[in-house]
Length: 192
Image (tube, rainbow, N blue to C red; front, top):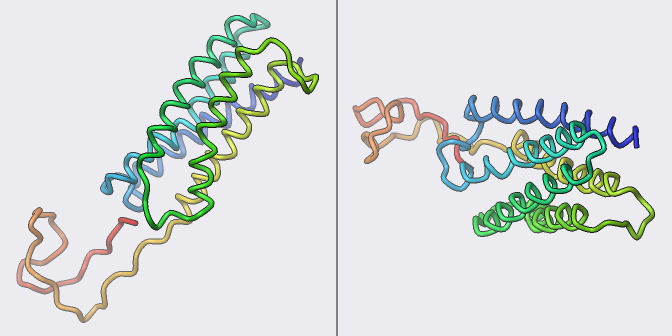
């Protein structure tokens, strides 16, 4: 079981480190993560892919062999993840890549597997329960890494041609888009 505990120590460390990196990305407003409502909604979804596995790993290490403690924690956090993943399925974007749609569909299933593995006493594969949970939380982590990769690889839309005249200030009064004289240098859009 020492291998499983070592795995969970590393999983927690890396998960919380990547959660901090994700918050840095959001702080730097890469893309439309803070301005686009659909992208803003997905920030919670991505963050939970690191927070929940990190917390599960931390509790499994701190449980020190107390099966009831880690089982309750995994079941509750798996349920939270499943509910959030199901709610996230409602937010669809037409331009979403096929692989991202696949990942969004897999998310609730992985969280349900976390709950099932926490509640079932034995494993049909002959693995220890914490090893089964390790496989599932590892898959959740990999899905989260995939979401991070897609966020970093996101391209900004091409700016309008430099010679194109701009209309006056926008109706929402966002400063910096126009110089107020009907022209000026366009500010690049940061939305998807």
